[in-house]
Length: 199
Image (cartoon, rainbow, N blue to C red; front, top):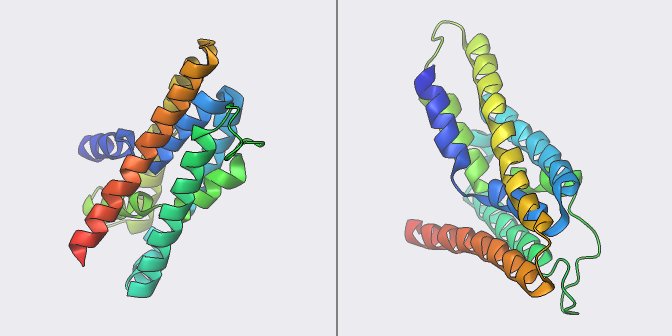
């Protein structure tokens, strides 16, 4: 069980769309908005877990056009979120962020987030805790995942919000927002590179 918990910790804490966007929302809009967004990520992640555990994800993701569609949607959505974060609080007219990403934005990210499926599939199929009690094992794993998932995401929001609270000059705040957005774009670029190498 400790091995499983360690795997959860390291798979979740590594930068991916969820944690990077949580930090970005915290940096751009503050702690309260970040927590609303994380609530959406939490709901969305548990929906992905349900799809993985029920076998629905495996059934759907075996179809290549569905995988491609999810990849395109997730990439487009991450680009959209990166732009929202990059231009939050800036005076640029290109893409002013007039509203904060909330619960719905968080929910929408997870079902199209390839990392959510990969991590949860690895966690729920790769570790045996209670081999003779599959429902109890899935429930225990769900509890462990969420006990570790929630504080990590809240910590990333807190990190972003602390940057915002530093009351940086507008130019520096813009630089922080751009750096957060650039980190998300790096994840998108890595995903694209990986997808192109798989084909």
